Image (cartoon, rainbow, N blue to C red; front, side):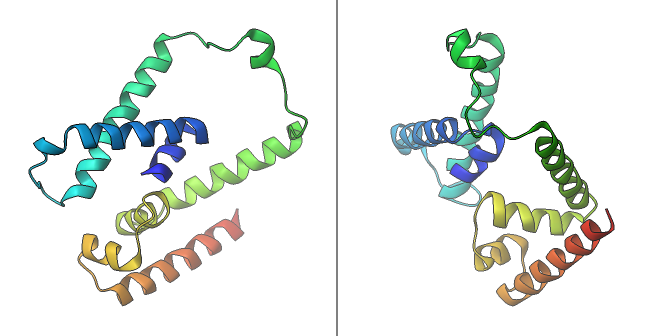
Length: 151
């Protein structure tokens, strides 16, 4: 859950806050849990997703609360514009390469790297054996590597 929220917020502090709020909400609503499709994990992720949606909505309505000087201050380790541009281009290339993958491979990457599931858990979700997931993961990484070498 934390990984999912971190990818979407971009800030560890925000992801930590949303994760803790999701668990608190789940605990408060535990009596209403009825074991829907997929069990407890998807129910918990739904709570986290709803909190994330509210977080985005609230951010759009509220002005920044930090003083202007603090908001404009650059840390000493601020990367140069060139390195920032290079990093942005690499990120764009990786995203494009992932989008070009078949849907099942995109889902595999999301389950493994965003949700942090094991190969066995991914296999259960995708209806494949753990060995098949390992092989598909290996082929997917090789395909991404080849695609990114061409860029």
